[in-house]
Every structure is written in C-alpha cells, then in structure tokens.
Image (cartoon, rainbow, N blue to C red; front, side, top):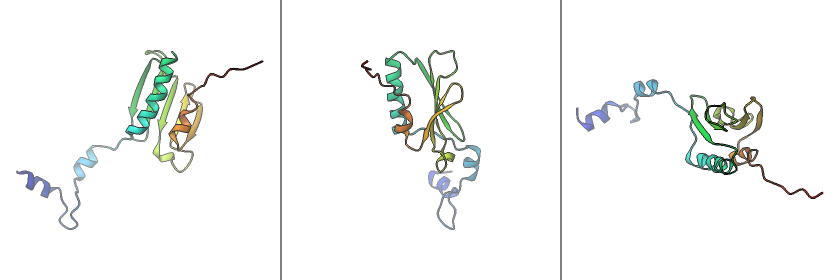
Length: 127
C-alpha cells in the first residue's frame, strides 16, 4: 500500500477529517508539562539545588495529571510535588504545590504564583 492510499484510508470521505479511531483508542491521552512550564519549574529546581535543599527530581505524566516531584535524597519520598491537573482549571486552579505530608501549600491557575511558595528569599531581620 502506498503513502497516498494509506492516507486515504484514514480519511472520512464525507467531511475530510482523519478518523483513525483504533490509534486514538489504543493510546490514551496523557497530561504533560509544556516547554514554558518546565522552564519555570526547572528554574526553581535549579535554585533549590544550588542552595543544597534538593538533589533529584522525577516527572510523571498520567492520564489525569502531570507531576514534577522534588527529592532531597534519591531514595526518599518527594519533599514537594508540583502537580498540573487540567480538570481543576475552573475550580481551584490546575497547578498546585503539595508537601510530603499531602498538605497543599499553594494552588492556582498561574504557575509562577504557585511556584513562589518554593522560592524562599533570605531576608535580613534587623533587631
């Protein structure tokens, strides 16, 4: 079967749209971080590594959410999880930072505001 015949077999003859139902049913959609989200997350992670707080990370892409886990040591549970859950976009916000205990530290629709909870700035306190 040639390339043109293969393309024609995937097209619906009535409206010209692709209807490869077998491929879409076999491969479930997953939620993932886009390039800009990963850039922001890795910038915060880099600052935490430079300060000595974090040493490792993991990225999980699931059907309903994407999770970026931050680890202090490689063999431990994650200290923080940055989660993206698009189903919560209209409710609490699709981004959240979750502590190791399960406590949600910050939640919202703007990633930079949610990540601000992890950026602890050193302040000089005059007494």
